[in-house]
Length: 129
Image 1 (tube, one colour):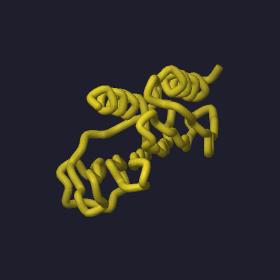
Image 2 (cartoon, helix red, strand yellow):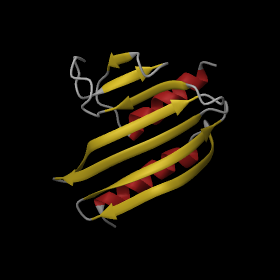
Image 3 (tube, rainbow, N blue to C red):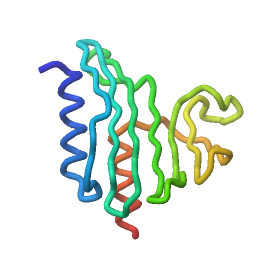
């Protein structure tokens, strides 16, 4: 199996094994030898929804995320948080990496995010409820 397929299989296992996830759907997935992308939609146990998009490449046997957007909204469709690396907020110290916290207008600096970190963050956030 390729590194790309291995990476996607590992992410899917994390999703399936997560006690926070009650349903998930593959919206798009591309597996190439040198990288790939995915878009998954998850429904979480509190009724919130998480849309995950990541484009990545394999560099010397490591996975490097090149583009991402992780959008988390409550059951009513209101934004909770969105992490992305779109280059539209140059004023943020961690540009292009940033997080929208509670609204599109509330842009905060944030370290680079990836799907594994995100799933760990969600598990911790929902454990506190």
